[in-house]
Amino acid sequence: MLEFKNITVSKNGITLLEDISLKIETGKLTVLIGPNACGKTTLLQTLNGSSKVTGGEIILNGEDYLSLPPKERAKRLSFLPQVHSVIPSIPVKTLVSHGRFPYLGFSRRSGEEDKKIVNDAMIKTGVDEYSSAGVDTLSGGVRQRAFIAMQLAQQSDTIIADEPATYLDQPSRKKITEIYSGLRNEGKTVVLVLHELSTALEIADRIIVMKDRKIAAEGTPKQIISSGIITDVFGVGIKRFSDDEGDYLITV
Amino acid sequence: MKTYKKKGDKKIMLVTGLIIFLVIAFLASLSFGSVKVSVRDVLGAFFSPDISPVSTTIIRDVRLPRVIAGLLAGAGLSAAGVILQGVMNNALASSNTIGVGSGAGFFVMLALAFFPGKVWLQPVFAFGGALFATLTIFALAYFADTSRITIILAGITVSSFLSAGINLIKTLDTDIALNINSFLIGSLSGVSVRDITVPGILIVIAALVTLFLAGPLNILGLGDDVAASLGMRVSLVRFILMIVSSILAGCVVSYAGVLGFVGLIVPHICRRLFGNDAKLLIPCSILLGASFVMICDLLARVLFSPYEIPTGIIMSFIGGPFFMYLLVIKKGGRRLNA
Image 1 (cartoon, rainbow over the protein chains, first blue to last red):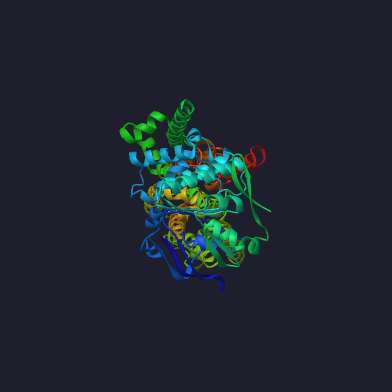
Image 2: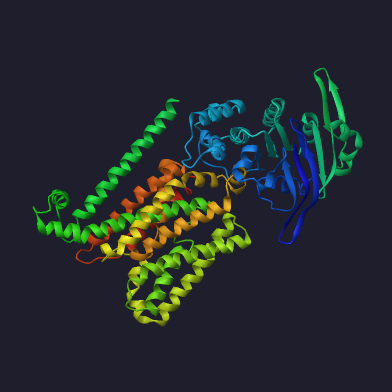
């Protein structure tokens, strides 16, 4: 269980988040949705220290998460930030191996087990064939999967990604959501920020809706759809569409 | 797989080439000068000093301290350049461009102005100035934010401020103005064993620390947000790296003055040759930087022999066109990020 308890975030005297409380259930795929600038990223950035918590606490599986040393946090929870400001010109394998950083000792030498974990992460995300290619030479979708492989190499039980599928084409988005759904099926706790409402409602076990830097609603996708909160927050409706191959949710 | 192996082989060949180049630059620097000494006598000066006592004296007492000073200066400034470019993720970062060189230079001028004749104070002040500039930049960035852009802006501001200080002292004290030119351009002329003993030890230690910090530098190259998510204490690591770079730059400035370009261009050349992995980039920059300064100093000694020009002039003459080449022909070269 990942629990945000009365979280307040302030910067330079401006309150960015106030008294946010939230429970993320273990082993579920939770999707955080909300309009731009509603506080989703600020909330998640409390997990890697990019947003300083000025009030409240974060409890991860019974531990006071914020009091843990950074490397211990990174072993328990991996957080892939939003669109990466830096596209490194290093081989994919090197990037993925950075996911082992929290586990490396004083010598910072990777062992055989680390190498195996890195290889497994590349295979799982389908980037093993690009292992010696430069990250900056890859298409957006493959590059994002390389970053996800780095995240998987952290081997944390709680996996969080902020807009992992933004700016990508439909096949790439599908691959990425499949990877995270697969991780949930393995028993990991997964939290994603997604902007595509239909995808969010289709893949999530739980949905959290944020609006104006507050939690507006939370529940199962069915509960969220029937509550009408989607229309209140986004100004769009959700319709179910069926054909021979199955049911789909579309925004209207 | 085959391609990967070939790339690895190419890197091994390039590193071997750098080591050979360093040895050649070292021996050539000892051999050439106003008096030419054969390579055999150069080697003899170390292994059979009695065979040619005159050559031995020239090599061991006159040239060796200067060549080692050049080697350490190139190694130190190049390592500092890799660190600063990585920490700030900015291709224009180097000790000189962010004001660490100006800080050291300004403090040395203060020493000359207020404690004339106390030569031993110069290295202390140079290091103090480099540290002052680094800490000021870091403090400015800390109170604003530690993003790369803030740090580079803080560096440019501090550099401009300290350069104004240098020019003020030059304007007010004409005696200093007459004697300080070589220092401000950068020169290894007249460097003695005493001048380089303490800075040299510190440069070697700091360079070793830099090698150890290659891993964190790579992580930092992914961006602050990703680095923090991987469990890195971003501000602390950035602070340590900047302190190490100021030790390297301050120690070099203390005896060689404000040498330009080496810290800027050598990391760029090495990025092009070896990629952005700091684990390879740092040792290669150290090797190439050391060779580059030794060669430039050799040219400074022999080009207009018996007259000598400051090493910094040669470095800028070589470095300037090369940098133009990078900017115009190669559109900035390889991406910086590690």
